[in-house]
Length: 316
Image 1 (cartoon, rainbow, N blue to C red):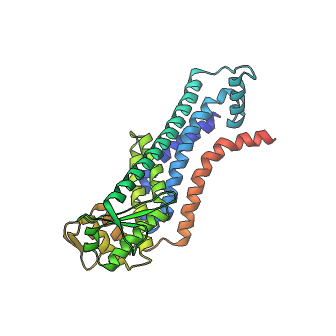
Image 2: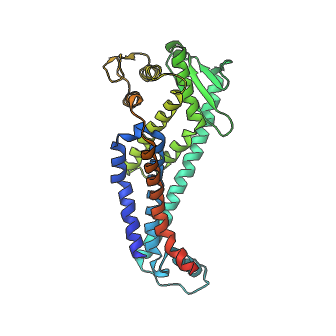
Image 3: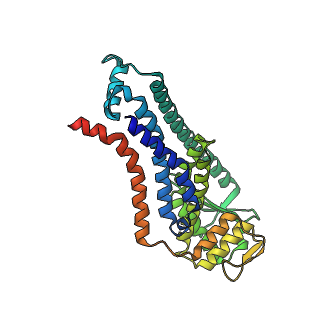
């Protein structure tokens, strides 16, 4: 299993550093945010499998020639069903590292989910106290706040869209429709779950700069996905103006073309990316299929390295 462990470690290293950097600097994700989001999730999942797999395969080397056989032998030795197989300190250390890393990742995921749900409930209670319902928009609450505010609070059974009085006074009817459709997309597509997973990854590895980079990139991609949903209801110019006005608090307006100069306060960097990509040519279907295939391959590689030899030996 030494060769498999080395291969998994090399694969984990590639997914931890050069691959995310190349992906974050690529231009095509803005043309196909859904496809790019699938690839980012595959990178994270394959990277986690490879890290854990490299430790496990190395740690179980004294117990068998592959992960399945070694795992069965280790369990039998641990339970006393067969004599304990001598294992060196490095193998014990690797097994301990795998258990600690896996437990650390799982615990951070659970803590992130519990905290997010607790904060969501508290936030929802505050919104219900401080806002009034909009009869013409079921599930929408209005905050008496002069700042332009729009966000959604998705839940397992109910979803709440929150708008402010400042937003209603700032946007015209079409721009407001764009914002509402954008927020509805966040809720219906459950972008909060995707962001939660990457937030847990970042919390698990705070010293890992790639985890923070991935969280930022995924956050921008889900905004673009929500924009694409809004584009089905309004034209791109209306959406661009809504994005600028909301991001700057109403102190900026786009010029005659999206790429032109800005008047007033400049929009945030993320808002600027969202606006400029509205004129980007969609990624061809063939290239999307290639990226999806690459995502499937990323997950398949560690899975095959971990399980294929053992399953083959088991059924021979």
